[in-house]
Image 1 (cartoon, rainbow, N blue to C red):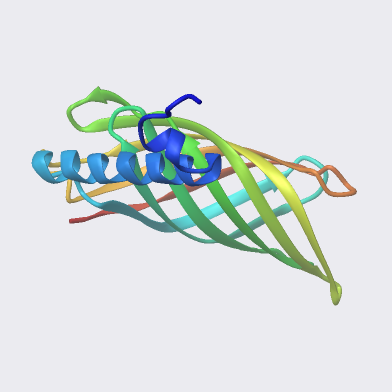
Image 2: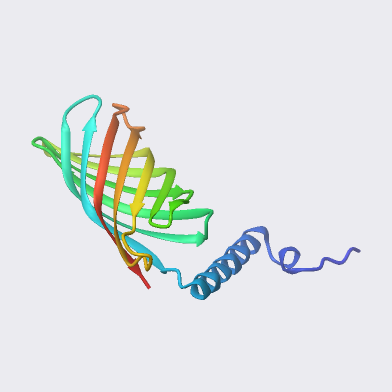
Length: 178
């Protein structure tokens, strides 16, 4: 009979991973508190998207991002309703980004992630999964990094029937949440 030591051996595999993730989040929160990092950053602005198959659409954008691993991982969850003459499209995404400080006031965060697209066109509703790639530029005018602005070009690929591809850009305000 062998004796197993440690938490990972005592818990089923799924519970061990959940416990490990919880410990990582607690350590990240403590490090953020010591360095006075914001708990989250809100992004509020406008977006435009140009389909490579059809026309363009415009709308507001709202997102929140957190940094569970400082200087390694930023997770952004956002929603963008896009309006055009013929349809309304709701894009919801979760993007995993790698942060780079280009200067004390400029950050660059390239990332990729999954998206869900809900489209209403001519009374017909469709839902599809998609993938998105972004290049997020964040500009912080003061060293305190409480307010700033962002510019985020993007590319998306819809895995639905039409396999639509789109280029987009978002621009707006950054608000640090303590």
